[in-house]
Structures are given as C-alpha cells and as structure tokens.
Image (cartoon, rainbow over all chains, first blue to last red; front, side, top):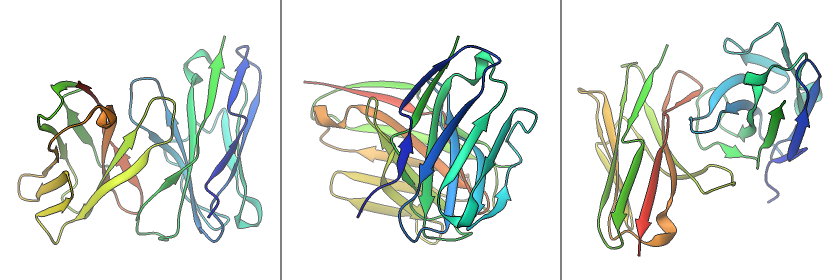
Length: 115
Length: 110
C-alpha cells in the first residue's frame, strides 16, 4: 500500500515569509497528525484531525500556524509569517485507529530552514 | 498533560552487546506505549508497542517492559547489530494522541 506522502521535502525561506506543506495520508486513514520535530528532539504534536474535524490543536501556535483538512483526506499546514525558531522537520502521520491511537504511519517529512 | 522523559540521550555499545533505553511518563491514565526507530534522514517507524494489560512483550531481539505502578517502561535490544544504529523514541498515549520522548541516539560499533 502507498505510504504517507508529503511535499515539499525541503524548503528554505527568509524569516517573515510564508510556507505551506502538503500531506496525503494512507487511503482510508481517518486520523491525521502534524508533528514538528526540531533537530535533536522528539516529535511534538501540532494538530490532530479526525476526518475533517480538529480533535486537538492545543500546541499549534495559532498566531502564525494554520492547518486544514478539506474533505477529510489531504491536509495542508501553513506558517505565516515564519520565525527562525520554526526551522524543523514537519512530519505528517496517519492512523486508522480513530480516537484511540494505534500505529502511526509517518511521511518522510518536510524540512524547513528559516534564514 | 502527559510528559514523557527518556534517557539516556546517547548510547554507544559494542556489536553483540545489549542496549536498554528507559522512559517515564506522568499520566497514570495512559494505556498505550509504542517505540519508534528513526534512521538518519528517514521517517520514524514503529518497532514494538505494549498496552497496559501486559507487563512485557518480545519480538525477536527487541522487548519492551512496562511497570504501571512506577510509570516507566523500557526498550531492550539484545545481540545488537550495526543496523540497529538509529534514534529511538518512546511515546505514551494521552488520550487519543501520542506524546514522544526526546529520543536516544544508539550507536552500535562493529
């Protein structure tokens, strides 16, 4: 089966610019997550969707980050304006387990460098 | 909310030795504890998980133990091989989402 697809793989921007990341989860997976992984740290959950509804966005910096999952399939994560500390790998993951977590399937990630 | 502490942050072993990575968690309601392996530049992948109704689970050279009373769980890798070199993350469920530890970089020297 096809895995979780993410794009772009790499992005370099200046601070205060905007950027958007796209994720296509495994077909049929209702739950989609965006994690931020700063170099040398564990993944930190930004937002969790169940179908096209937000389950948890308590760690999402809403003044600059936004995410949507239209039609309950693909998702986009946007940062505007970017700050230096947003430099990280943004991992998308999906799960078929609904609200109770089971195995998360991660994409390859989108590496963001903010200069 | 849930907090997961993982140690050590780095671990170096000789090929064939055992490696142990430990995690503690704060939320006594957590019931699911997976371990992920992340090779350099690649995606994290699940290697083993355990639910709170068992104390130990084994899969070939890897095993996980869980002590719910003490709120800690551990990953054990026996007969380590160079291909085991990677960053390992523990995680705990809280609820409906996974909270990850900081990671342990394991280096297996041939």
